[in-house]
Image 1: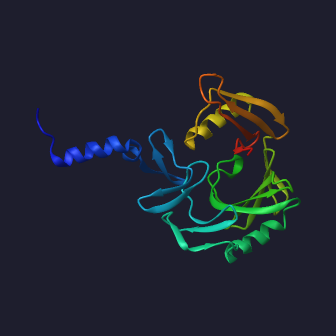
Image 2: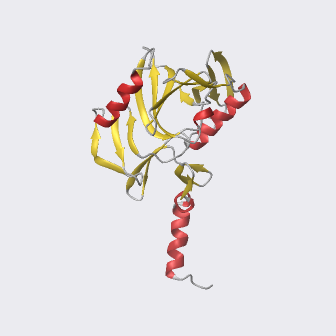
Image 3: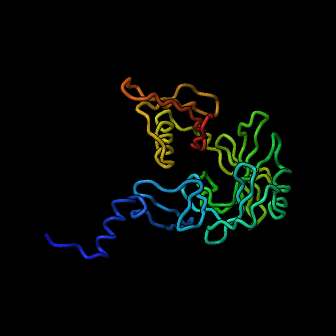
Length: 242
């Protein structure tokens, strides 16, 4: 049998040992960069080539300030984390924008998320500062977006997009996703986050603006796995209940 050259042998061993990393690659579209991993892509924090990056729920790499669990992290223009700027105090430039948006917040506590492209209704294709308001139980009420290019502040609530500067409704679809679409959203969420896709994914109830989705195995021969998720009926956003 012929012997493989040393370089080829090393490549084969690396491919076998880490097939996902070998298939992983950076890709770009009009909204930015994302990092694919075989049939999935990075969401949230991911360490790539010794640098930390953060990807939004659509897999797009974030830049600038992000708020993760009440800690502010700064991501350079290339997406890499600048650990020297990490702080528990809202940065001054974000505080300035926060104060502008908070003027229009009619209920709940305003929270800053990040700055990035939006894939929702009339806001698609815009790179905006993202906020949301939450009630005393920590449930999301409304989403707010700030456009630094013109000072516009938008509110998204139950499918209605309002330009708050002039109190003008610019989109009023008020169309909710179906139960089937909610199940598909949860499947996509599980796959994108590398989570187990349960045998059964079922909408258990309609909680007004959200579907309550239950994921579980229906086979006694396996360890029972049970998870619960909310799916926003108007935005399609998936969040864990626990």
